[in-house]
Length: 121
View 1 (cartoon, rainbow, N blue to C red):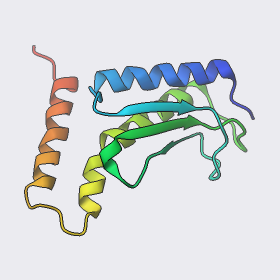
View 2 (view 1 turned 90 degrees about the vertical axis):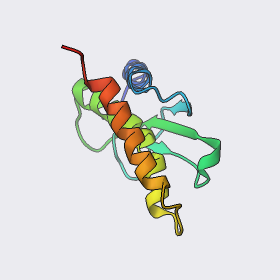
View 3 (view 1 turned 120 degrees about the vertical axis):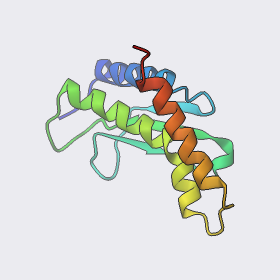
C-alpha cells in the first residue's frame, strides 16, 4: 500500500498539533514523505549530536502492510514523543552524565505532562 500526499498532510498536521501541545519549541522539525528501510509506517531521523536540536519526521510511502487513518495519527504522536524524550534517552546513554542531569530531565518531562494533561477542576 502507498501513503498519499493527503495522508502525509494529515500526518504533518497531527505532528504539529502534538509539537504545539507539548511545547517542543526548542527543536527544529522537518518532514519527509519517503520510504524507510525498516518498512515502518513512520520514522524519525536525528543527529547523534543533540546540540543542533534538529529532528526529521517521516511518513513511509510504500508499505507491505495495511494501515488506517488512525494508525497515521498515532504514528504522528509516536514520532513527536520520540523528540519529546530524546534528551532523556541521550542522557541515559551518556557515558558520564552529570548527577543532576537525569533527575532534572525527568522533572522536565513530568512538568510538561502536568501542564498538558492536568486540567484545573
